[in-house]
Image (cartoon, rainbow, N blue to C red; front, side):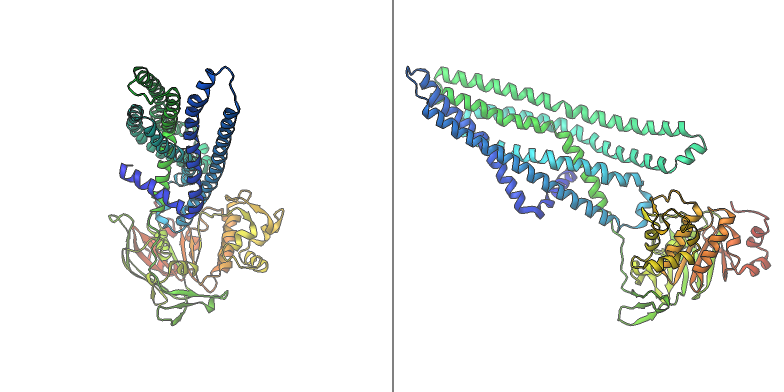
Length: 605
C-alpha cells in the first residue's frame, strides 16, 4: 500500500467518528484536561521548589501550612487528571466498539450485494479473515492505540507551549532530540509497513488454506495426502513467519532506541540547564525551573517513544483496514432492471409489472436467442445458444463436464450476464427485470446442497420465510422428505448445523427440494440434483422432483441420462454449443451423440 492509500485509509477511518461527534468532542476535552494536568504538575514542581522547599530549608522555624495547602491543590489536580483519563478511556472504548459494529454491519451488508463471481474467485477463508483477523487488529488500534495517539498529540502540543514559555534554548534541545526520534520512527516504520501488509495478506492465504483443508479433510485422508497437506501448510506458514518476523524485527527496535534517546535528551537538558544557571547566562533559570523543565521534557519525549512502540499495531491495523475497505470498494452487483414481480402464494397469480405500470401474467416461457458468453473475455464458454421452453415444459441439458450446462442456469439467474444475444422471459428481456424479482420467480435445487444452522423446519421455510407450519409439512410431504423427518429425534424441530451433519446426502437433497417447493416458483432449475446420491435414494428424490416439476417450466441439468428420459426436449451440449436437440425417442432415432451415450457406445470425458 503506498503513502497515498495509507493517508486515504486513515482519512476514511476518521470519517466514522462523525457519527459520534459529541462523545468524540468530550474525549478530546478530557484528553486536553489530562494533558493540562501533566503541565500543571510541572508548574507546581517549580513552585514547590522555588517558593517553598528552598526558602523552608533556610528557615530555622519553618511553617508548613502554605506548603500543605499547595500539596492539597496538587492532589486535587492529579485527581482531576485521573478521572479525566478514566472517563476518556471508557468513552473511547464505547466509541471504538460502536465503530467496529458499524464496520462489520457495512462489510456484511455489502458482501450480500456482491456478485457471485466475486466469491468464485476469492478464497472463502480469506474473506473470513476480514471479519476475524482484520477487524480484530483494527479494534485493538481503536481501543488502545488511538486514545494513546490522541493523548500524545495533545500532550506534546501543550507541553511544547509550556516549555517555550519557560525557556527557549532548552526547548530547542528537546525539540531537536524529538525530531531525531520521529526520523528514526519514520525510517524504521516505513520498512516495517511493507512487511506488515504482506503479513496480513499471508494470514488471509493461510486462513484460506486451512478453510479449504477443513472442508476437504475426507478427501485428504482418502488419498493419504496428509504429508503433502502438511508440507504445503508449512510453506505458507513459513512465508507468514518470514513476513511477521521481519516486520516485528523492525518495529520492536523502535521503543528501546527511542526510550534511550528520550533518556539522553533528559540528561542533555539537565547538563545544559545546569551549565546555563551556573554560568549566569540565564539568570531566570532557577533550580525549580530546571526541575520543572526536566519533568516537561520527559512528558514531551516519552509519549513519542511509547507511540513508536505501537507502530506495529497501527501498521497491522491499517493493513487490515485497507483490506476491509478493498472489499467494501468491490463493485456491488449492478441492477438496472425496472420490471418487478407481483406474486402471491399461488404461482398462477404471479405477474410482471412493467415500467409503464401495466402487467404481464407470468407463465414461464423462456427463450435463449443467439446467446454467447465468456468469463474472461477470451475463451467462449457458450456459443450461439438458441432454445425455447414453453410454459410447463421440461428441458434437459446433457453433456460432458465443462460443456456449459451449469452456465446456462447461471445466465438465466443472472449470476453472470451474457456477452451477446438475449434471454427472453415471458416476452421480457431479463436484463429489464430486477434481479431479486427474477430470482424469486426461479427455484433452484443444486447438486451441492447447503443447509443452514437451525431446525429442519427453518431450513425448509428458508424458501419462503412467512410460510406456516402446515405449509412446511405439506412441502415436506410433496418432496417425500416427511417420512425421514418424522423419524428424527425432534422431528421438524431437530436442530441441524450448517453442514447438515447426521443427514445423508439424499436426505439433505430432499430438504433442498422441500425448500424449493415451499417457495412455489413458476420456473425450476435442477442442477445435477441426483448426481451424488445412490440409485435407490435417487428414485425417492426423483419422485420428489417429479412432484416439484408438476405444472412448472423446468430446466434439468443432468449427467445421468436416466433422469432426463421424460423431458419434453433434451439439449446435447458439447464445447459450449448445442449439438443435438429433441426428445428421448427422437434423439435415439437419429443415432447421434445421445444414441451412442445411451447405448454405451462411449461415455462423457
